[in-house]
Image 1 (tube, helix red, strand yellow):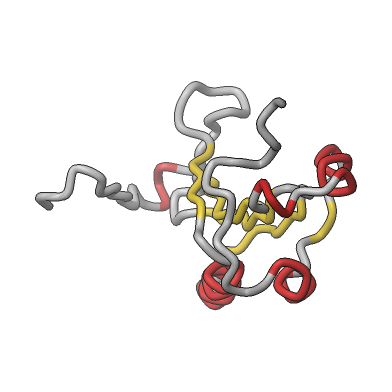
Image 2 (cartoon, rainbow, N blue to C red):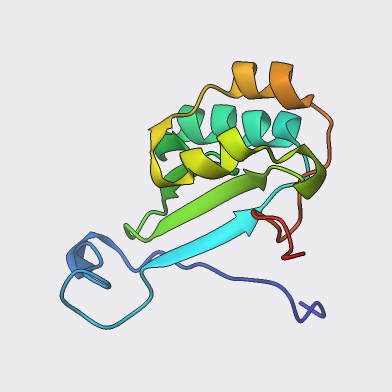
Length: 126
């Protein structure tokens, strides 16, 4: 590819065994990507579910995250960040508690097409 931002993932095969990186071996444990909207996060959740790759979905308060595994067992995350102007004290306080992700409820609260906080999950200091 001529795009220097491509990421190529290659399946090694069943004989390689699952990755132990981050759990007793050095190596890549976790990748994360950020999406622009909750509608996009929902579309990705549906597709990962169809592929049998979705491993979990968590509401971290200021972030809404999907977790999945690639064919070699490397975990990756796809998340949407609550925009800074929509962060409330309730949301900030809930960051230490993990809850199951309810995308429908998040879309109702924040809007399906609201652009996420791109790299922001806590307000800037005053």
